[in-house]
Image 1 (cartoon, rainbow, N blue to C red):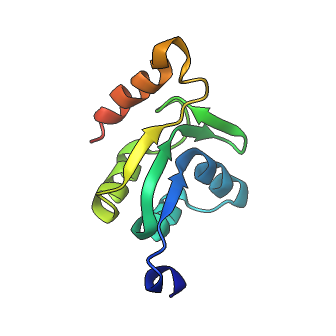
Image 2: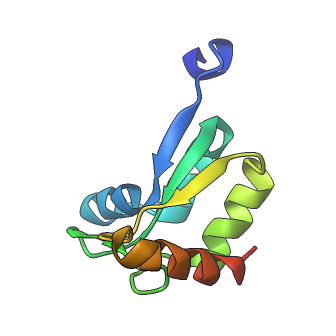
Image 3: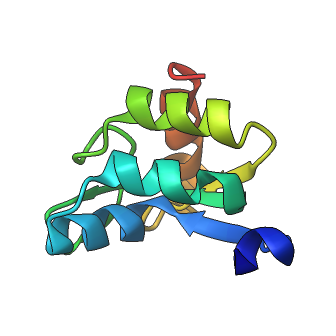
Length: 106
């Protein structure tokens, strides 16, 4: 396998991956299970439908407890950052809110 042989590591954009899975009618949790061993870093935001990107954590369709269970088991050392749409405004209000929401799934 090229990825394993060459120690390929990726940045998983969770929101865009969920949108792609929705569009292709594929299981998001299965996708995450398949890519998790290669994840070094994650951009975390929720998603809805095929174009609702960058939503606040729990405002979309991602099953966060399941997602966190998979990544904590399969790629526990991956770093992450919230990537909420306009999350940097008001001194990072959206990013701080995302971190607080994510802490309940840790």
